[in-house]
Length: 134
Image (tube, rainbow, N blue to C red):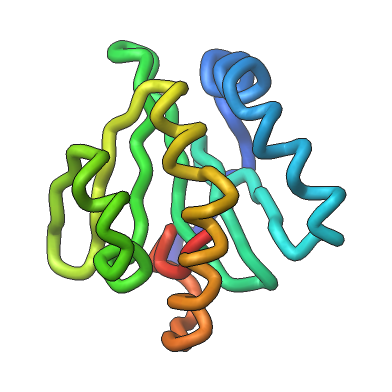
């Protein structure tokens, strides 16, 4: 039986893009008392709030966009997110392709606080990247 390999890396392109574009997010981690966490996965980042997976952030080099995946339950009650950002939905997940400046807006403090309230209403176990929200 083949062993499953867990990959915890970012490609050089993704690393450079994240380092350049997400320093604002990384700077939020320490002042939050590490309520927020950012974990490296298989060439994407998984965002956590109090140990709950909020979603995934993946870099699309060819388009210079970030693909964000989050559970619809964390976002649908927040009208400003639904109106402002173009998205698609597959089953329970929302997918957004955003330029860096829109990522900053999407992950803004005001929206994140609304997500926290929604996160408390739902109790998921792992795997729904941005299943639980930041």
